[in-house]
Every structure is written in structure tokens, then in C-alpha cells.
Image 1 (spheres, helix red, strand yellow):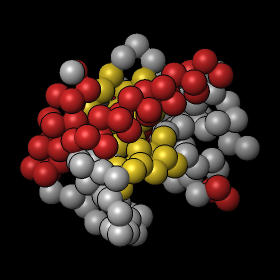
Image 2 (cartoon, rainbow, N blue to C red):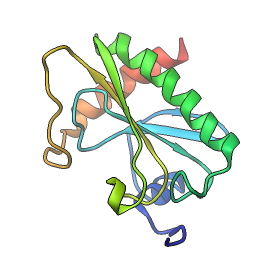
Image 3 (cartoon, rainbow, N blue to C red):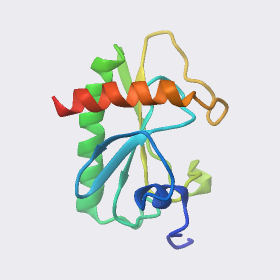
Image 4 (cartoon, helix red, strand yellow):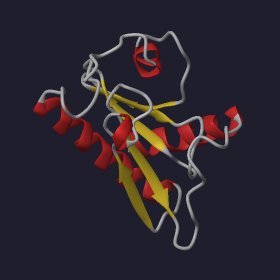
Length: 141
């Protein structure tokens, strides 16, 4: 298995080298909107630790990422008036992983509305900014 690559896109986002629509940050996790969302509110939760995937992350960092994912799921369900939520996490190419920094997808879902196909639609930045502001405000209480 390959090692962690510090030039991956999420590492660059964490270092502030690439922009994102941040919705949450604490000392161990960072959450931002996917620029190619499969549904409104599609959020990515990542550890700040350099972890390629589930195989090499410290258990306490993995647990924290999932606590944050749960918090985001609850807020996103309210903000986007979702009927449920899908949580996804992929590992290595055979498991569907594309960006090699561990990340959890939080996808607020509505009954009868299918997800958009992965990586097929880039959302307008104004829409992402609006969604990020609403979700961030809900997370702050």
C-alpha cells in the first residue's frame, strides 16, 4: 500500500493552499463542502492528521472524525430539510477512494431523490457559499 502523499488536494486545503467552503473546524478535524456535490449539503469531513485512509489513522482520530460527521449529519438534515443521510468512506482504489487523505462523505438525502453521479457536476461557487454559510451557522447553534 502506498504511503501518505502530502501533495494531495485535501492536504493542500488544510494548509490553506487551496480554497474551500469550510463549514466546521476544530483541533483534530476539518469539514467543507464538496465542489462536485452529489446532493445539496454534500460535506466532506477530514482529519487534520496525515492519514491516507482507515488503515493508517490513529483510532482516536478516526473516532473524532466520525463524531464530527454525526454532528454535521444532524445539522445538515435540518438545514437541507433532508429525510435521511448517507455516510460514505472509501479506502484505496479498489474500495473507490480517489483522494488519498481519509475523508467521510455526509450526504443529506430526500425521499425519492437520487444522488447525482459522482464527479459529474461542479456546483456554482455562490450556491456553495450560501450552503456553507447556512450549515456553518446551524453548527454554531
